[in-house]
Length: 292
Image (cartoon, rainbow, N blue to C red):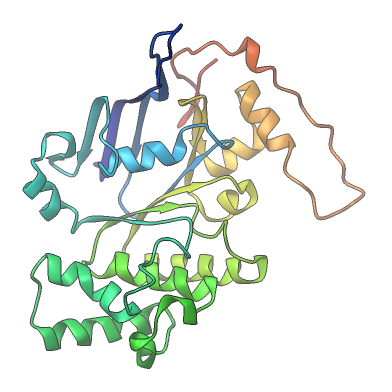
């Protein structure tokens, strides 16, 4: 199957400020990241805070400009697109942000927020755009009559649904979900996750799912890539990764998952970051690659 998204050797360096007695130094937040995402799958990108997973997602969409590497979406070389070409291409790949409180403009009515992509891309008339907004609200489980309200009148879960409606407005085939439920109450998380899965089936969506909740990743992802210090250290089908992790960091990460049964306390596996040496991935089983 031809991948929908191909990422090859992606690098992002941030320039740290220098001082009177030290030179400015570069911080490599994403370091030689390579993976494919297949049509219709949910590809998980996991790791601890600061591992580079969110930066990777934003570099793919060029919300942050990569330093090096290649991003291919279908037959488009995303890094080679001009500003106008990129604007047109963004009809096909969108993002749902982590924080539903800061991702919506508090001064715009939510209907106008969802309609904005249609205006930017000059899709339809005013009447057809408004009809599309009402349709999108119904699609994500919101009352179409609420389009005239402001973001502060909605709960966190409802705001995340509005953000999802905005992402769906242009009928994309790829959505980058940047920890879309981590800022929500546990009682609401399951509702939003079930909505994402339902929309994927109905609309044929492909997800790049960025998360740190490993139980959630195991539940919804087809394949998973584990990141540490800006590098991918392991890629495998989800069940295979959880059943037989190969990299020491992955083993340590999985050992930290809390168990519902208080009596089932498995020993924590420590990981010494000082021993980490960046090496390339090699195949350890069918479809399973690790930096070992």
